[in-house]
Length: 70
Image 1: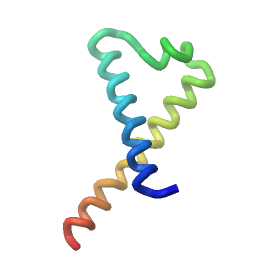
Image 2 (image 1 turned 90 degrees about the vertical axis):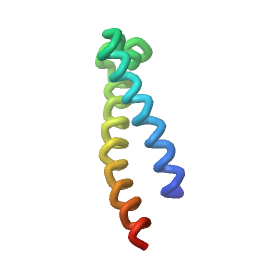
Image 3 (image 1 turned 180 degrees about the vertical axis):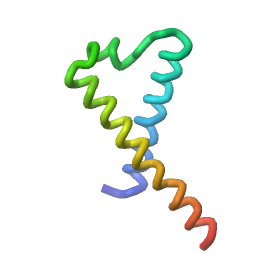
Image 4 (image 1 turned 120 degrees about the vertical axis):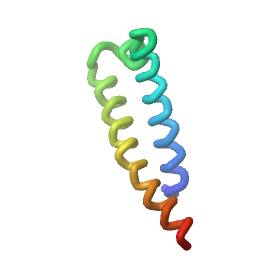
């Protein structure tokens, strides 16, 4: 898989996760729980993928910095 494709896919997932946190904070509405159930195995997978995606996207900062120095 191309790194750029992975970056965009995970960025989309992390944005969806951020929107979900916004819904929780503003309206006490959890979209993941609404769609997949309260801590079902599927919702736990979704939370796990979003969390791993966020950790992976931390590496984007290093790549951006290295591109600007080149």
